[in-house]
Amino acid sequence: MTDTILQIAVSDDGIATLVMNRPGKRNAMNDELLAALDAFFSAPPAAVKAVVLTGTEGHYCSGLDLAEHKERNAEETMRHSRGWHAIMDKIQFGGLPVVSAMFGAVIGGGLELATSTHVRIAEPSAIFQLPEGKRGIFVGGGASVRVGKILGADRLIEMMLTGRKYNSDEGLALGLTHYAVGEGEALAMAQDLARRIAANAPLSNYIMIQAIARIEDMSKADGFFTESLCAALTQTSPDAVEGLQAFLQKRDPSFR
Image 1 (spheres, rainbow, N blue to C red):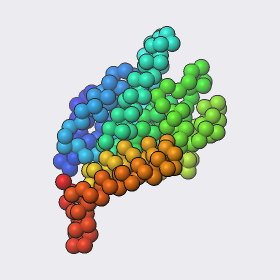
Image 2 (cartoon, one colour):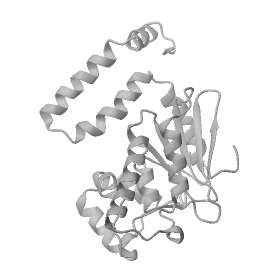
Image 3 (cartoon, rainbow, N blue to C red):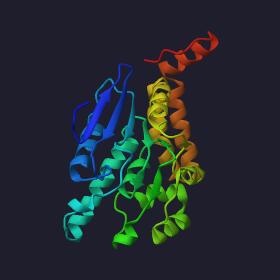
């Protein structure tokens, strides 16, 4: 790792650990950090099979850095928001499984970032909040869609109107996180889960990432048809043959 705004380390088994690194800023999001995330997920190293995303100094990400906020007109603001959407889409649909190790602030844009990842682990210090209403603004990085899908519109409205904070256990109950762990345990668990996910067939992982969220947006009939297409692609692949043989031979599969 280097002393950069996004520290990147890739292990021998293909797990990339990305550490958002803005000391003293609670890893608040600025254009430089967004650009670093964009650069990685636009062209990840070929050896990477899964990603762990986390923060430093006791915080995951506290959202937009208001100290570096630039005044923009309506068109510029819309384009900036759409830029956030594009980067979050690269994380969610880029094809690499991404696991978030969360603690401290998971606020505003930090929650938008977290909900673009596929597996989320929270320590007791984690705080989930969308405080934009207190700043006289509206979310712009995807919360109305991604967080809204998790909470539902009713809970999202209440969360944004009141600025309420959810803790780790509440986040687990609501689906903002998938695992609630002890102090200091999130990163190790995230890396372990990433290794387990990376051991799956690459095509299966890719199809799960690409298809499931989209199927949720489809009609039931379209969803069933898309599921059949995904089954046809995966079940006729060389990895499916290897997976069956490994099961019958009582050994671990060796996917390509």
